[in-house]
Image (cartoon, rainbow, N blue to C red; front, side, top):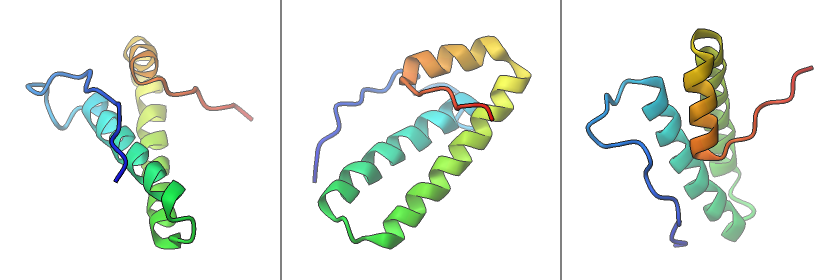
Length: 87
């Protein structure tokens, strides 16, 4: 198993239902699955799970960007997530 160098930025006492905490949690899962898929290239079920988590995180980020742009930008900067391309 590959050890992640990702350190938690969001404090543990924060509300676990908040959008920031959920995005943070999904980001950790995404990093774990990505490192797993680098070793196991033919694990298509994990790849499907990764795509589902990516979609959930994207929907949460879209919601946050519409509700509070300042919190959205702060979270994007903290987690080093690229902003989605607009069509």
